[in-house]
Image (cartoon, rainbow, N blue to C red):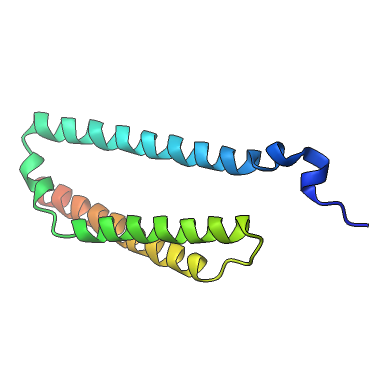
Length: 119
């Protein structure tokens, strides 16, 4: 005998995991924005802010965030409708790959700049 989760927990409690996930995602975004703000303030104080502004890979960051958001929205709506997510999962991974590439190249540039200042 299969008992749906909705009948055990009630309709309202069924969405608690989704709400917790969204709350956690929001907290992560706020935390990352705070870290980025502190980094920018430190760069302004050190006089290196102009170098950050000339990053030509900013479109990769924006595109990656957009594709992740669209993919997660597709997965969420498909799951809530009772279907099996397909295209949204692929889009989410493409967006995550773009974000990974952006942050890897940014870290590589920082390491190269640190090595240049040491020599």
